[in-house]
Length: 335
Image (cartoon, rainbow, N blue to C red; front, side, top):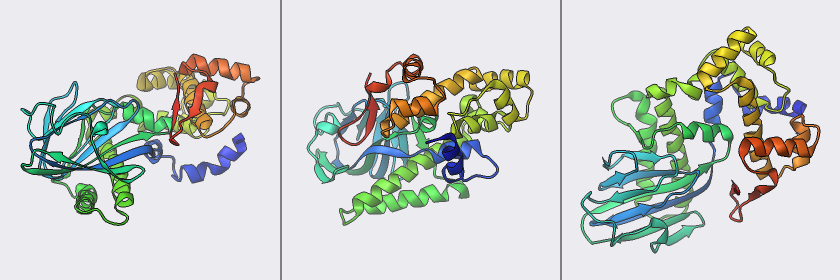
């Protein structure tokens, strides 16, 4: 894809006028490689979710209750309608009661017998025969570097608050739809539940950005800055352009020195280091989508494939040739 082609498609990829860098970042929260499970559990029960690198786990309590235990976070009781995200691939425990040992209806979720409803959706039934709890759980990944960067800034546990505000009515409605759909196995249920779950994950992240003090600082805060945010959006839209501090300062309508200082203060690294890393993160996605090293070297302004490959490995820690498709249709960089 040439620079001209990228510019032609900007309005399709980012349909915001004027530029809204934060909206563009949220627009790129597109999930892939998801697996979803409806769990019908009877107390006592205890389930272990193993660590899954570069993933986001979520849990919706449809009925009953559960206790969630995540490393570096206090245990939490979840009741019907509660929706929680564990965003950093951490392993965690779910129990009917915090005193229940992690044995019995027990063990790792991925190793327990399940009924497969589709390639990416299962039903898990187990427990000791007591009070029933129904959960909808899932593990998803994000492709785009913008999305991965945003998810990396989330707290160890993100719990969606759906009470007390008219603005929260939409998440509440989605939760109700998911709860209704999860009550029975029916035609199309997999498609409905998985799509609603994806929507809820995005809503939870958006809610955190709207309310958390931490979202006013760092990279997310920089996206919301009226000047530095415009420069970031320009890089995100066209990382292959021959950016300089001067050209980025013009995007921000600032002097070169003032822009350089403010960018580093808000983002946490100099502008050109950010540009270089962003190019290689975008190149990783392009390689996973089938682009060749030669195409990316030319697109990114490098004189040769060797020069591009050297820069790619220096910034990402892996060679371009090590980026391969996974056999299951998702992607990863093999380290």
